[in-house]
Image (cartoon, rainbow, N blue to C red; front, top):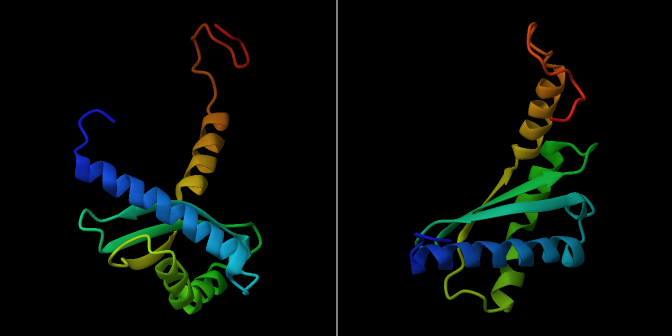
Length: 129
């Protein structure tokens, strides 16, 4: 946390608080079963706290278009529930985005597993140094 200003810490704290509360609302209060299949992975809040990008991951087997439609339909309800909790003076504008980080990590892992040992090197796969 070294080098962060007080405003930077606040943005981070607000993002984590929003992530936690939005995840609870999706899990416990939304009636749409498609939204119960989501995991909120991160929330990035702008420095002025007026916009928030909410990253989510849907479980395998769910269609991205249906999830996006369900989120768009539930956006007003989610904002209303957050407003009832009086977390922020001004409610940020939400943008729901699928989180590609886990897919990228899985692909990177596949690539690392596929890499063969360079001919002439002393190490062999599976040996610990």
